[in-house]
Length: 190
Image 1 (cartoon, one colour):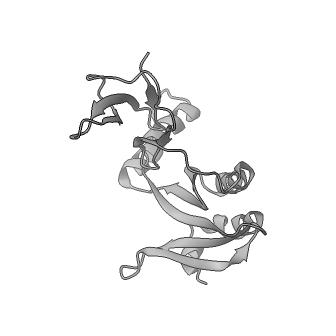
Image 2 (cartoon, one colour):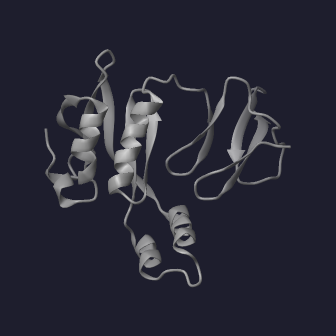
Image 3 (spheres, helix red, strand yellow):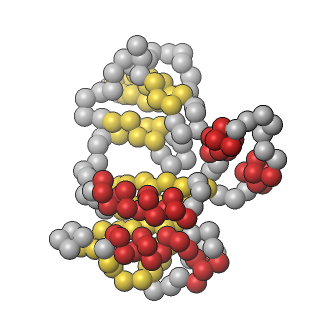
């Protein structure tokens, strides 16, 4: 059986095998099922779903931030944000939150007839787009201290800015995540 992966939007991606211009083997994901399909993930690679829903093959990244530290941020995020998730890459935990756009507001204003609230939430989650709002960067591996950053949306900045002082993941998550989606988010500066 060929390798298939279903992303958070319910789209199925198939792993294909091909060759580069130089004749070297290459693997890639596509939603099309035609072509030469792979029957296993190549050794030394893993399947990775990008926050935008695209599926890629990549070499495993070293785990610098523990599962427990990521879980702290996820728990705090889900207390304050309905649709969001945490992406862990090397020494950064990046918080993604669903964008409020007309498409998602239409779903919320006009519920799907004869669908349960859970089923409606599942359908909404498939159609949402996410943007990075906050990151927690490991700045001291020994003391496990994290620097918090938020995304700045000023036209002349459009980049990450530091907020607060480095602290434990529990402290910075509790101090800053509840600001996401509120006016107070834009008042957070270092």
